[in-house]
Image (tube, rainbow, N blue to C red; front, top):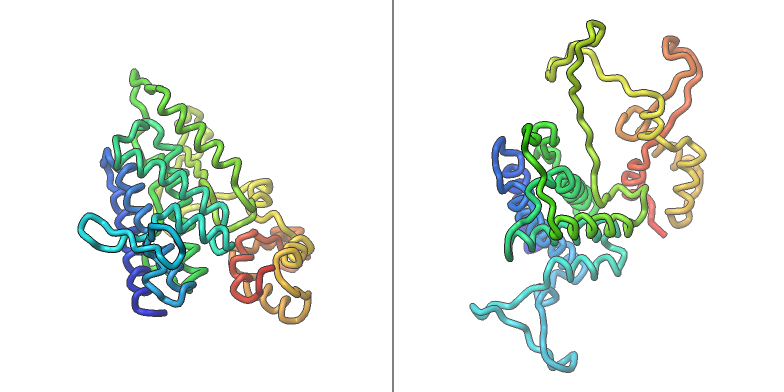
Amino acid sequence: MKARCKDLLNRAVAAMVAAIEVYNKPDFLYRGETFAILAANAWELLLKAKWLVNHDNKITSLYVREGKGEKRKRIKRTKAGNPMTHSLSYLAAKLSESSLLDKNVLVNLEVLEEIRDSAVHFYHPYPRLAERLQEIAMAAVKNFNTAVSDWFKEDLSRFNFYLLPLSFISPLTEGETVTSNQSVENFISFVNEQEQQAGDRESPYMVTVNVELKFVRSKSTTAAPVRVTNDPDAPAVRLTEDQIREKYPWDYQMLTQKCREKYEGFKTNVDYHKLRKKYDSDSRFVYVRRLDPENPKTPTKRFYNPAILREFDKIYSRK
């Protein structure tokens, strides 16, 4: 990777880490606005790094030009006289047109920009829409992590790339009301409309991420006591069969069919089976269902999470 691209990538990661750190502070009333500003900055730097990779590292390819005629266009300058570079929305749209940026990322960034612009140019009118904003923010972080891995083969696991669940953010107190106005309604409508424009539902990239965490107080004497703990000996949370199938919806036939649809010249040969079996023990991608859970010798069937295609993307060429 060229030095300029590497520098932009490092700065993009630093900006996203800063956005997450601010958001996760225990009491920060401007968390949503600050996150949107820093996260949008992180994404713009990341897209500029990707843009340079695809334009022979020519810094001039990022400059905004003005004037008539392709050859006579001059570089547009800032008030300080420096070259003005393309915006986040311009780069996202162009990369999406070239199929280099997933449609879901484009839609997520459009919503993120709306929050950023409201905070920067006037004020953020949605103080009680924390849940909706976090769904957007979590998708922005997840998409960023995925894009860095896909585009630059960089592993960001050394960073804690997560946002605290809203269950750890104070809810409305008794007697407190939610103020609704036209700005709030406009924003909700905008987000809903953008979600309808989402691309491939099986893509590893998302428009919004829904996370639900509930602790319910019960007076029942039969209710099991629960504590949040990092004790490795604590009892594990069990998923229902429906929840498991929702997370791992594909069997072998469906996975193979999705590969045929997505990859150029795909064949169900030895190489495919070897690659697939490589992830058999990775619970992120594969769930092994036993006919008799108590019998280790019982027949098994594997189910796959669509995210496994992200690993296959590194081997196969997309259509």
